[in-house]
Image (cartoon, rainbow, N blue to C red; front, top):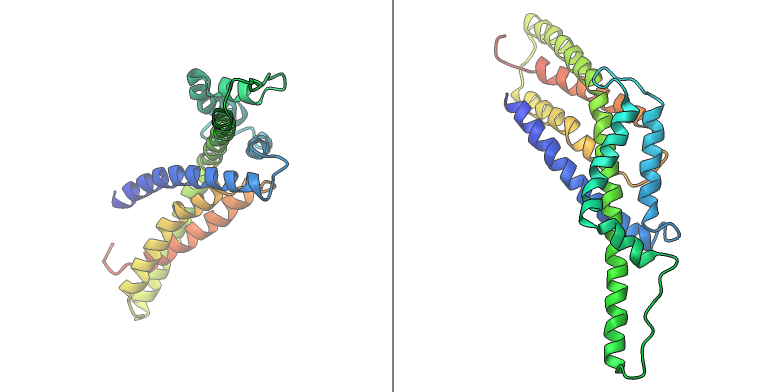
Length: 236
């Protein structure tokens, strides 16, 4: 029960933190690593994730993963549409935008203030669009983790069974018991189920097949779970 609550709140915190960090990475990257792409870099990452999900259109939890993923993308986009943030971005970045030319009556100060205001709105609208794409990407990757939940459950079961066998062998063989190993293995199990996902959720570069993530972290969960159960000192 305690571990379940820790994992639930941990995943919620990690999801929000990954979204925040992802937005910061995209903002910095738009001025450095992918200046030519700008806010559309995160859009490309979303498109790549949708392609990876389309490679596995079936899941034990969802009948059609592609349809579910498109719904997730739409859910994130809906508030931005309702509030008018996407229209705001389109108006400021539209190709046919007619910029107001300064008149002779305007002072130099008012012209500079107007240019600064327009530049600030232009930048903020780009950041808002980035936040939408990053939100879509984070929830898509969280959906991938949910699709892989049966694999993690199986890994936990394998780890528990293997740990119980190792525990009985240690007890009957007269091996030493260490609460230090148990508590640290339990902590690493919690990290593997939450912190490891945070790295995946906030990863800003494309070309990363989520199947590799599932494989690595299922193995890590199975190993840490087996170690924690094997080092458990109380009688079962």
